[in-house]
Length: 264
View (cartoon, rainbow, N blue to C red):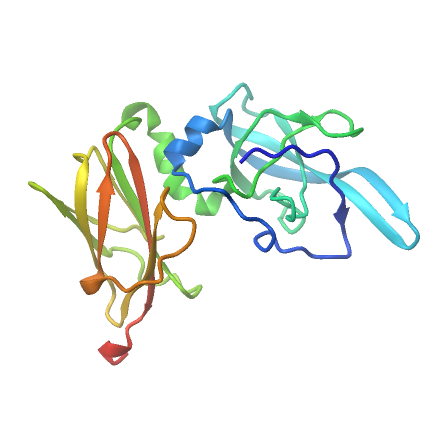
């Protein structure tokens, strides 16, 4: 979803939740997001600068910009060490806010060319919450694709992440994932963040079986790009069905819940 923004005022006195007011039209895999995004880079937050201020009575409205230094370029005309000025959003218009981020925080951005915004000086970038832009700590699955794209672009791919409904991320490493289809079976293990990845699969239908930790079960799952929200289902025997088209990428995320039947 492209965003045209003419005026953006950030109210310092009000904390706005980014997720609350933004409804995205669709979900995209990293492969699809790379194709649609003119610019794909990693960058470091250097500072926040005030680019406009309006005073109305006792209220002060500030328009802020995040100043970033480009660290790596995957696509586009930006250069390493070049400065990006990104409009800081309040979340309600689906643009990302950086007000709570620490200086030095690194990000992966999928974005469009910079645009002139109202009377503000110079063009600025807009980072949509509906893109796959994220902090570098959670960008690992996307970086796997980006760092290997020249070799692996266009190959049929199944990737996924095992998560928990709580913030507890223990026991997400070395979960065995068995992917089986017609004349095909492969077993992989998740990494420390619960991520797994298979490339160059034959197109077709698959059963994806998760050997989840004792005392847990799959409580929900979702397919990207098919699903915008979680499927709140418990698949029998922790086996999820998957169908992948030729040269396509299917991303499967599963969330673990407590298995009360196990007595844990």
